[in-house]
Structures are given as structure tokens and as C-alpha cells.
Length: 279
Length: 359
Image (cartoon, rainbow over all chains, first blue to last red; front, side, top):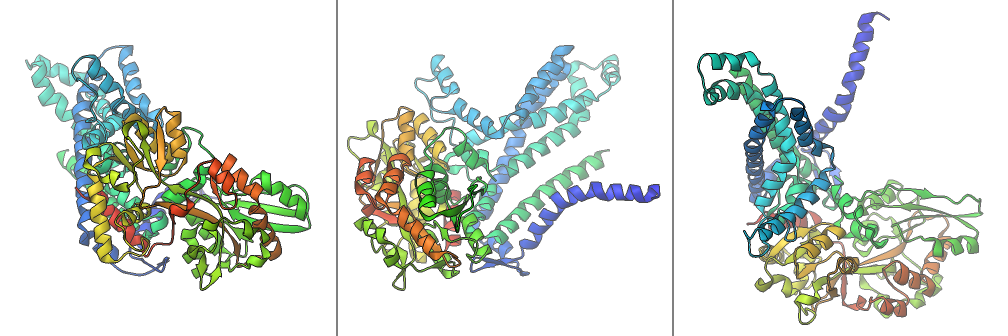
């Protein structure tokens, strides 16, 4: 065997895994989104009825828009909290820096469901937050305002997804050469000016990546909104979920999934385009 | 995705009823993988059962195997869909017996997967309680397709400390005075069915478009009073216990015990409008090989002893032993509306989604 064919073979082998496990299922969904269900049987077809069904039902596209807004807000909150935290860690010196970073990343090793339950026990009527507020006299009695509403979704999602914001921001901050900040100081810029004109612009790619991660992950999360959002924790992921199981409307579910997938793809593509233009 | 099943099952041990009830009440694909138990010894006859976990227990399986010198292979289904897929895959030829609930009859009979029964071959059918004899939901064209075995309900569960007397109507779930202190099961079919019952509609399983509009309006009105929806036995119990909830549209009787374990003085009620009931039956597969042995199994399951075990040890209502039912509080079979196949499941899911998307 020549080295060329063996290299080709190796490439084919490596490519087959993502092809089989990622591209093929998504392609399958895409194809199925043009099929239909007739008498509890999924029938191949070339209909746009599933996409029309989405547009015709205002409950669906309103939920879609609401979900996008919610996820954008989660990403915004994530950046608002995550950037200062990353910056603070970056400015630390010595061993404590990486220890703190590790502590903030640690929740990633925890089960996702456990994290939701933890947040719920913190925000709940008998939860830590209420106990603390009553103890300190800020509240007279425990409040139900922290859980089972949209605020709770924002708090919980932003908290759970925080490591995905902190990590990329921290990494871009780390990559800023010390010489640049030193040069800025040498040229007479104060700490504020250095931050606004040197550090912030250079850390924007990581910030955008963090926001994107959070946004896309939030978009696909239909468990958290449902578990902490109360009666109004209904998101588009849940609409997709409801088409499977007993409803057995896989083609419609596939069409909804394709809509969400294409939207996420468009957001990522737009971000990549803007990043490329900035260079 | 399986998170929901995880959060129900993993947190605390509940009666064996869970896996079965969960599969039924949510219609979601449960996790449990099918597994086949095969006895080591060789026997002359063979019986193949497809059922829910808990329906072929050693207490009545072992004596049966001995009496008929039979080899019994059991496949457990994790969800309603899985069970149907397994039967359809072989057109019933892979199994002699299955335990389908009343809501599956249309689907199975329509696909020709189960055979009409000859009650003369099941002497113990005389043991059936009056509430389970000649149930219309079991009949098609004058023929009976299922023999009732285990049952339960989706009752109203309330906190006795917050009520002077047991609520007599589901309307407590619509009472503005209880706003923020109510939770309800997140399930399209059951929610629509219950709302139709509360509205007093004739046939809660065959709704017209106008009736769907009424149901939707009713459910949206309720939504505005709810603290949250829940989707799992433990989830409902935990939210109820930790949030000062007054009443809930529950997933089943075991939630009462779960609440008591957490210190809530909980009780269940079957309000005047009735409650949704599930009824699991034994059916003989259209592809059964040893039909006589299949009948013998159904007959064995209808013995008073098995009924006693079902209610005393497994927390199910049984169909043959009223004493055991009474002893365990299962006294309301005649007030239940046993699930039937709905007119259009897809439509119900759409309506439920619209309710949940409403502001």
C-alpha cells in the first residue's frame, strides 16, 4: 500500500465518524421534514405542509420568537456576569488564578439535572435565597417571586452556562501580549483607557464566542425552562419534543427542528462573517 | 431525550407501579431496556409474554410455570410506543400475550394484532368485580378483547391542612383563591381529557372543534392560576412539598404516599366529575402459538390471590378482589373514566402546545 492510499484510508475512517453520527442524522431529519403522517404511518413525500404548519400557527412562531429573545437575554446576562469575572481572574497573579478558574469550570463536571435541582432549591420558597433574605430582614416572609417564572429561567440558565462564557473570554485575555498593555501604559494611557482601547477590542472574539456558545446551548435546552419557568416556561425545544412520542408527528417535529437548526447556523455564520471582516 | 425519566426514577424509590404508570401517564419513552428472562430448565410448553414490569412477578409466575410445566419468556416494554412497535414488527407472531391498556385498543385491534377472547376458557373471569364486567371500553362489535388486570387513577391530590373538607369538584383547580398554589401534570392527552370531563362534555375522547375551543379556553384559564406544571412522580411531589401547594392534578396514587413521606398531610379525592383512570388488561396476541396456555395465564392472573398481591404489595388496584382493594383504598373504580384512544392525538398535542404558549 502506498502512503497516499493509506492516508486516504485514514482520512475516510476519521471522516466516517462525524459523517455517520452528525451529518447523516441531520440530513435524515431534513429529508423527513418534507414527509407526512398518514394514519399513524410516516409516509415519504415532498410537501411543504410542515413548514406551512409552523407559519400558520401563531402559537408556534410566537414561541419561536420568545425562545430566541430568551436565549439572547441569557447570553447577554452571561456576558455581563462572565466578562468581569474573567477579567478579574486574568488580573490575578500566581497559583490562585488557575485555582479560581478551575473552581468556576468545575460545575461542568456535574450532572446537568443536578444543577437545575440545585438552582431550584436555592430559589424556591424554602430555599437558600429566601432564608437568607428573611434572616437579614430584607424580606418579612419568603417570596415565591424567584422561582417558576421567566426571571428564574434567566437566572438559572445564565448560571448554568456561565463556564461557557468565562472560559473563552479568559483564553482570549490570556493571549493578549503583556507588551501591548505595557506599551499602552508607556504611552501614558491610564488603566481605563488601556482597557477600552486595547484589552476590550482584543478580547472581543472570545466574548463573541462565549455569547454564541451560551446562545446556542440555551436554544437547545428545553428542560431548564420547563423546570424553573412555571406555567410560562414553554420554549421552542419543548414544541419540537412534543411532536415525538405518542403524538408521532415526526415529520412536523423534524421541520421544526430544521427551522431551529438553520436559525442557529445562521447566527453562527453571521458571527463568523463579522469576525472575518474585523481582521 | 431522557432527562425527565431520570429525574423521576433516580431520586427516590417509589412503589414498582412507577415505571408502568409513568409510561402511561406521560406517554414518554421510558428508559428501561427490554430484557428477556429465560428460566434455565427446559420445559415442554412455551409462553411468550410482552408486558409492563411488575405484571409477571415470581409470586404468580413460578406457580404457573410449575403447574403447566411451561417455559415463560417475558419481554418488558418501556413505553406504550415500544410495546406497539414490538407487536407490529412481527404482526403479533413473537408473543402470545400482551398487557395493553384500554387506550391502546383501537390501535391494536385496527392493526389486527390482538384476538377476541372466549370468556368460557377463563373460568376465573367470574371473579371480576362488577365494575370490570362487560366494560364497553373492552368491547368491539360485541366481542371482548381484553381482561382487566390492574388499574389506577390520576386523582386530585390536596393538602388536608389547607382544606376544611375534601374538595368535591375539580373546580378548586380553577378557583382564583388558590392562585399560585396549584400544580398540574404536563401531559397533552390527560390534560385535555380532564378539562373535557370538568366541562361536562359527553365524550371526553371524541371532541368536536367547538369543544376543543372550550377545552383550550378552560386550560388557559387554569394556567393563569398555576404555580407550575410538573412532569414526573417525584417532581410533582417535590414541588408540592417545597412550595406550599394546596392541590394538584396528580399522576397517580403513589404521589400521596410520596407527599406523606415528606411530611405533607396529603390526601386524594375523586371529585364529582370523576377522574381519569388507567386500566391494564391481558390480551391474547393474534399471532399466539399456544393459545390454551395463554388463556391459562390469563385465568391464573384472575385468581383472588394474585389480586391480593397486586393491591397489598404492588400498590395497584386489582379487578377481582374487592376486599384487597378496600383494604388499600382502591374503592373508586366505578367513578373513573378509563382512558380510550382519543379522536386525534396530534390535535390534542397542538391544543396543549397552544395552551402552554398562551400568555
